[in-house]
Image 1 (cartoon, rainbow, N blue to C red):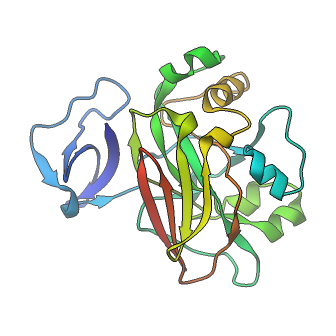
Image 2: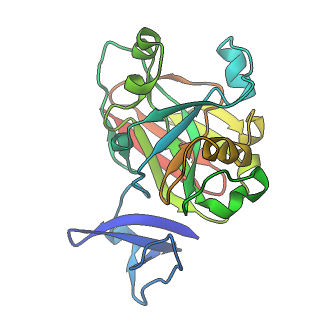
Length: 250
């Protein structure tokens, strides 16, 4: 299933995409999914970010080739940091650079969306707390990242976390192709099989530290090939089995 949030007639709704139509989910996606009987044409609604998380948990340095291109050793355990949930935007919305002089880079990532409260979840049971997966772009100001020696400010500017276009619920997450295109040119081209820590272990690790709630998002690291963006760019994140997240840069 493809779960979305969409705007129609000045109201926001949860929905279920079926081919070129969308059916509203009056009760949302975190319990029993019961679509409304009437469908709207998909091109008659505006897709929003598919989730509004209470927490946005991020994993750094989680692909082997990205660690090598960064000249860093492979971590012994996931490197976690938090970003502002207010940084999240949806498909088609603009990434607004906080500076035209500083280096701001793209990072294609697979995002996990949690479906229910979870604490101390074993990796073998991780799938039971996952609603689904979506595409994310972990936009990062490298100058501030180096200056601060940590990531919160560099990655939390409003619009710096595009997510979407929907949440795919039927997916095997650890063998997916993941690409990023900048103005139609492939910049990142990898597979989630290159992850150092797979999604099930990430959920186990994060839930051993903090209670996860329905709608929380974990982004799982980026593959090799990260690079700078500039105003006017078109950035597309493509993950097999999910689809394409497209945003422009201002």
